[in-house]
Each structure stands twice: as structure tokens, then as C-alpha cells.
Image (tube, rainbow, N blue to C red; front, side, top):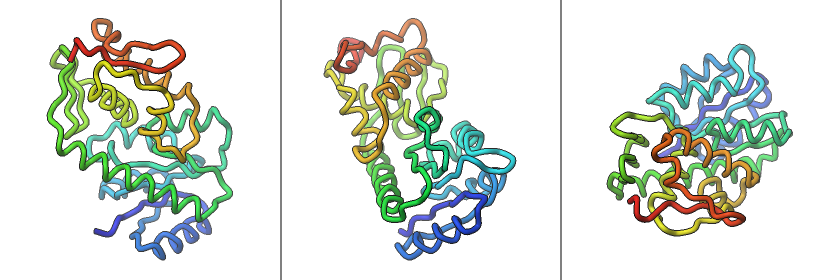
Amino acid sequence: MTKRILLVDDEQDILDLLKYNLEAEGYETLTAANGLQALELAQSCPDLIILDVMLPGKDGWEVIRQLRQTESTKHIPVIFLTAKGGEVDEVVGLELGADDYIIKPISIRKLLARVKNVLRKTTSAAAEADTHAILRLGEVEINPLNYSVKVAGKIVAFTKKEFEVLVYLAKRPGRVITRDILLNEIWGDDVVVIDRTIDVHIRKIREKLGDDNMYLIETIKGVGYRLKADEN
């Protein structure tokens, strides 16, 4: 099945360049020139969104926040494509739930490789989720089929990456998982992110699990993390 990609940028020449090269690779494309248009077109559930940060009106940060807060769009993968190349900007983008972060000027070969990588991971993750039942960790219930987490019977909202980290650990109770493994498995080995990204995600997961469950995930100093086996 042909994959559809939503391209969001306020520079028409960038949109034309992306559209031409992606369609040459066999993808279907939709285009939007601002954040509001992006949110409207996202309701058609494209397979991927390539999103500029510096947009008129709603910027890319606000767009991805709304995408991740909306049930119908929260699992659409997003690649940020932006001139904002600072480490802080990249960490912010990834923490908001982006799947990748590419800095302008654009390398078309790199972009196409990243697109393939994100789509491959999304397809693989969906296939894996279909074959696994609900995971239960004491009063924590994780449903891979609809990306939901319940704590003491109440739904708690997790970002896409927070959810993937939690599921990865929950499926391997008692095993020590290094930061490098989490970075490679969740973000991919061709995406450059820092160890602090993992630590921030773990901290947020613990906060959302609540005081009674935050120590389900143990820190193994200097190595990584482990989910307590006796809580599964």
C-alpha cells in the first residue's frame, strides 16, 4: 500500500523539493503552509508528517503538542525538518514526541533514508503490538493495541516515546537495559540523541506512574534501567 506523507513548511520551494523527491520514490504527498492547515490535513491520518518548526500562526512545537493530545492523530510519526539546529531545540522536539529531527539545509538522500527508517519502525511496531496482549505491572495496565496506560484503573496520557520506552522495559522484566540499547531500539541507530533524552523520558514515566509505582523502574547507576520482575 502506498504511504501518504504530509509535508508542512511555509517555504513553497521547500515543499516543491520535498514533494518532487518523495513522489519520485513512490510516496503520495499532501502539503500545508501553516500549522492550522497541518492540523486539518492530519485528520486524514497520513502515514508520516514532515513538519517545519518555524511556521506562521501555530508553530511546529504547538502542532505536535496538539497532534499528540488528539486520539486520532497522536500516533502519527513526525519528523521535524528545521533550521533550528541547537541541541536544546532537538531535545525539545524529541521530548514532544517527534520520531526524528533533521536540520536544514536539506540532504535529500538523508531525508529519504530517515523517512524509510521511521516508516519501517512504525510498521514493525504496529505488527509487534498486534501480537501482544495487555501488559500488567501491579496496578499499571499497558495496552499495546491502543497505546493506552491505566494506573489504578485511570487512563494516564503518555507521549509516543514515553509509551514505547515503558513497553520495551515492561516486556523484559528483570533485565538491565542500557541507555544505548534504548536509544537504538526506540529512536534508531541513525538518529543522534543524547543519553539525557532517555533519563528525561524515564523521569516523566515515573511521574506519570505515580508515587506508588514510580520505583517499578530501577536505575542501574552508570548502566541503564531495569523493570522489577516481581511487579509483573
